[in-house]
Image 1 (spheres, rainbow, N blue to C red):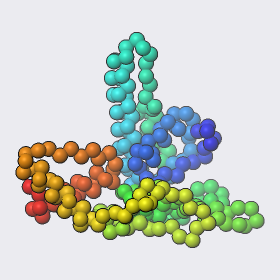
Image 2 (cartoon, rainbow, N blue to C red):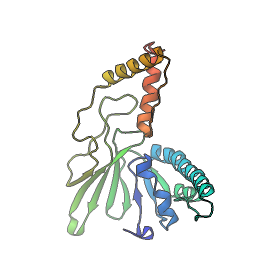
Image 3 (tube, helix red, strand yellow):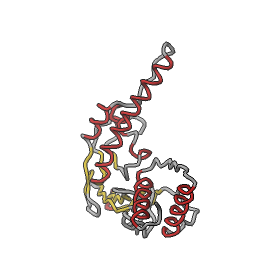
Length: 222
């Protein structure tokens, strides 16, 4: 629906800023319904959405100072909008069926992507007792990854909507990735260079920190 005031509720699959970052804008424009998410996603959104509002405000201040008399720029939302949005968050546990509307039961299943990520099963009871099993997922994680559990896949669905960013690729085994990282670090260290990692995504940043820490503890990098 185009009018945020007409949206009854939001169900959030995970906290990456491209999945959660516009929620305060909806609240700013009139949405006041519940926002369902896993507990970890709620915790991450508390950090990321406040940070997003702060960075926007700093960017706007810099732009308006630079443009001066050319018309002011406004942030998409403020810290106050974020606080109002956070008040509407409601955390749900994995694998716990919850009736979010009459005749609509929602269950989060671990998507194994980042901390708190979930695939969403909606069991919808229509007229005359007909039931539909509707599945939705953002990114689905790879199995056998450190830190994050293997994905709990949705099954026996009537309808499925999902992301497919890596749908046509074969991923490298995690052991090979660790050795590749170690090799790069050692080579750059030996020539007294610097490594800059443009890691913007929560899960990828978390994994990189874990891998670097592991390699250091194993004396595979200085």
